[in-house]
Length: 460
Image 1 (cartoon, rainbow, N blue to C red):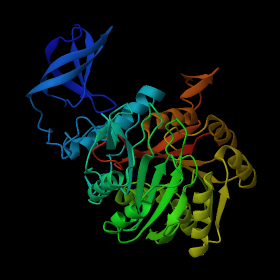
Image 2: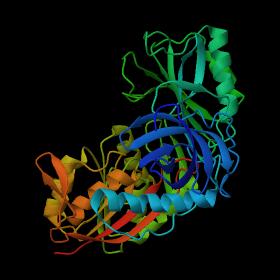
Image 3: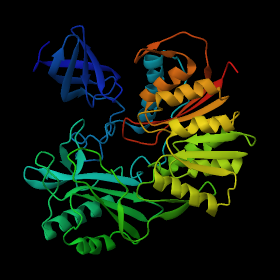
Image 4: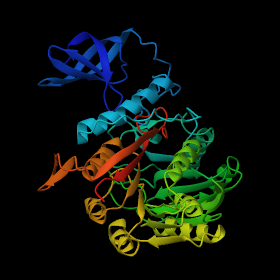
């Protein structure tokens, strides 16, 4: 087998990114967009040792699970990787993905509950984030191709609501009319870098990331937006750096209100432009309801990485006391106002780093139970050490990344241990036992999944 060879291969399984896995000449061949059971004509693009990467040039025998993608740029855009797969098969894949992560990373054989479905297979995202750049000398708005910063132009996105199409059209019209350019990462030229829109119950928080503080013709953009959104706020974030961080500082409000209110689970909450909220409201509701059900009325709960405080408030409504720890000042301020609006005297919000606040809290609340909903990178190693030393009797962990989830749970269960700067597999006494692993399909059509894990202390 060598580069540019064309072979007839049969897909035997799926990889962690949803790519097909084939076997040939003693090698494992990864082929994107190929489904188990399919036979395809595959061109080898790269090979090294017993691993190769290929491209399906023709599907010779399609699988029953193959469907036609709704997005015209599906095979070029890096946002979705599973639109060619029937939805029930996506759910099965994600259940297996979580189980495989635990087995491969932490040597834990776990039986996950079937992945909870999303009622909306498309149009479910309440947040749209688009890079604005240059492609072949012309302004480009779209999404990055997988593992690149090359923009794939698009005029709409089917996993976002219908408003994504007129918004993109309005952005192009605004740039053309006012002589504005997308940002060129190679030269550092261009005024507009990103646009971010978050929907809060049919109201919208729109943030434009720019290299300049004064944007020519901004009133004309407002005029175009007025025809799309009946109520919205507009923020500006100025970024002149050459790195890829989208929002470095809280954006400045130029028009409308800084926050919008909504109700979920009997809690009145609010969110601003930088407040974290799960992107799929229907699945978020199911996830939070299940998470709250794992705590009792007598519990004191410490909610780490608490965001705008919605889940903390739900816990306070049920439990004896709930602490929320959040590092983003805007989100923590939202949580404080949420507490006041809902009359939750037993909700205590702390603005600070989890690794600094949690040890102090555990000194005060020695019988507290813990909830973690960290960023994709997972829980800091120092925080895990604090948890292991305090002996909390229960941990509930919400994760958007099966790999970092499996790593952290491996440490908490004693299946993984530190050896210098590395983690190695261990076989020490079980510190925590897994009581529940429940995936939730927060992100249909993509390879991503949200997972809820319950851990019970064994050596108290």
